[in-house]
Amino acid sequence: MKKLLFISALVSCILITGCVSMAPVSNSFESAKTLDKGQIDAMGNYSIAFVSGKDESGVKQTNQTNNNFGFRIGYGITDKFDLKLRYERLLPVTQDDKNTLNGVNYFGLTPRYAIVKDKLTAGVGLGLYSFKVKETEDTDAFSDSYFAISPNLAFTFPSEKNFDVTIGTKIDFFTEDGGSIWHLNLGLGISSDASKWSLRPELGLIKDLENFSEYSWFTGGIAFILKINSAKE
Image 1 (cartoon, rainbow, N blue to C red):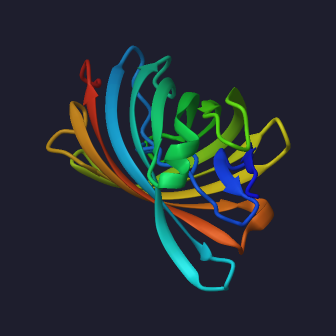
Image 2 (cartoon, rainbow, N blue to C red):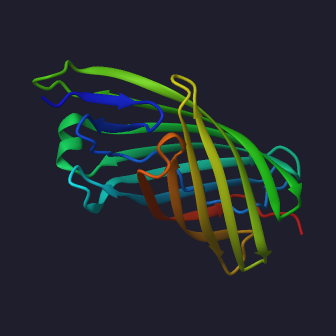
Image 3 (cartoon, rainbow, N blue to C red):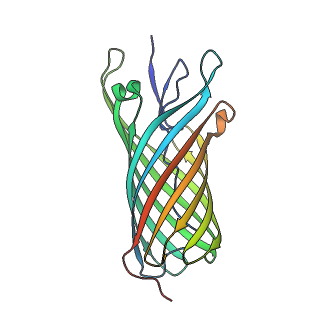
C-alpha cells in the first residue's frame, strides 16, 4: 500500500516507493540591482520544473513535475535596500499528484541589501507554503503549511542598461523538521531601458542537501518586470 507523505523540507509529494514530485519555488528573476528609494516595480512570471533521478530499477528518468504562475511587487526603502512581496501558485503535472492535491500556494517576503551597488546583493527571505491534500482511499483530507527561511546572494556582471547576467543562490531552511534545499540560478536581463522594464529568462538547479546525490530538480522560466516609476538618473 502506498502511503502519501508530505515532507516539509521538499515541499513536495513523496511516495514510499521513491517517487519525488513537486519542486519548491526557486527562480528569483532578479539582478543584483536594488530599487532606488521610493521606486516600485511589478513582476509577472511563469516557470516549469523537472525532476531527474533513478527509479526503483536504477534507470535514470527525467519528468516534469509542476507549472508555476506568480506575481511580485517591490518597493525601494533606500537606494541600497528594497523589499519584495511575492505570490506563486504551484500546479502539479503528473496524474498521481493531481489526484493528491490541487496545488500549492507560496507567499514570500524578501528584503535585499546592496553590498556592492548593482553587482552584489544579499538578503534573508521568508516563505510560507500552504496546501490541501485531497481525501483518498488511504488518507483523509487535510490542510497544512510550512515555513522557510532563505538566506540568498545575487551577483551581476555585466550590469548594463540593456543587458545583464546574474548568478543567484539561496538555501531554504525549513523550520518544521530542519530540512534544507539549495538553489542555483542563472538569469539574463534584456531590455531597451531597464529603468522602465525588462524581460528575464532564467534557468535553475535545485538540490536537497540531505540527499544531494540522489536526484535533482531543474527549472526554467521567464518574467516580465515593469518599473512603476522610473529610476533616478
